[in-house]
Length: 393
Image (cartoon, rainbow, N blue to C red; front, side, top):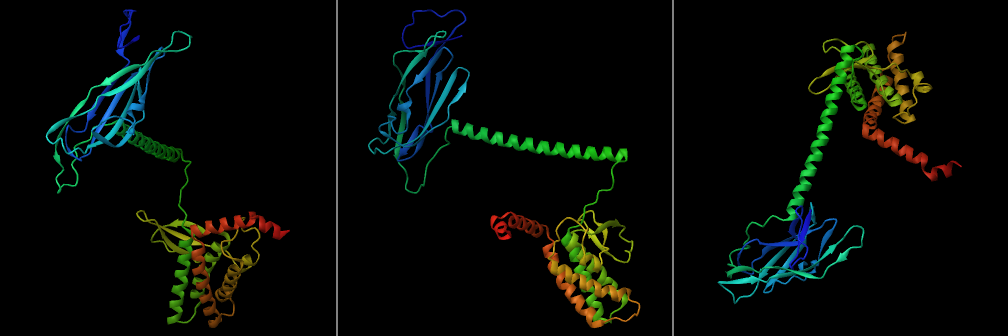
């Protein structure tokens, strides 16, 4: 049990289980005790007030405010009141001041910072009775001498010593520690999640329930490979004439591009690096460090592009006109590849090839992830926009 020690005689004597403590105690600390005229230095005033269920110290802190504190002949440049700290039965409060002396008649003398007088009262509570506030008391913080040396040298920008540690420094360190603790906790949770995921995959593999997990190639990379194949065909026909093999290569690339334009997907499967691809497939390389060889293909035909019913619920990536133009190019190369007369319309094939390169080059940009998401978002906004509904009506 705590018994407040007051600056006047107490009639009742404390019992054996009580401890006498001061209701209010204050400390003053200077950043430095020797200063130049005009030099700024810091001063902290820290106080501890007792606050329990039975007694509380009510301090009038107006005398500590930077605008009202008495420090003559020193001048208060700036001040700050830190957040109170409570520890057990004590409440600690602290003020930080930036002072300077501008009196030029005290060179080589000790100038005192005046004593500080704080008024306070003791509020007591007995049982459930209303709290009783005692008479006004005064706490005197002794004066503090400061040695004034001389004027600040003109060639020096500033003269400062290490500032004392304040409540603000402690709060900043506490915040930094809490932020680092939170970051460590998040990283720990992420690490545990990765460990759990790895353990789950290992268990599934041991049980034989885990199938091969393959990362699908980006649609833009697939369309880019189709464009490269068409460009290779163009180089081939520049040197030689059209052949059934060249028409088949162009047909494969156009089918894959049309499948991306219409369905947003193609058939993909991993193959050995040295294994040749089948007719109607294109070879792509996947990965940076662990590279894999992937074969892509599509079974779309010109008839499917004209009547895409049942192909998929997702809206096509390309516009309807692009899909129709791809269908015409596919029909041209299909006739050249599988025609019975064996004749090849060179002019028509060349024109269809150039059209296919142009269409797939545009499709490569439209099939990127960012553009596809932006297009879907725009379509959603247009569908739900009130003006569009009014126009439909």
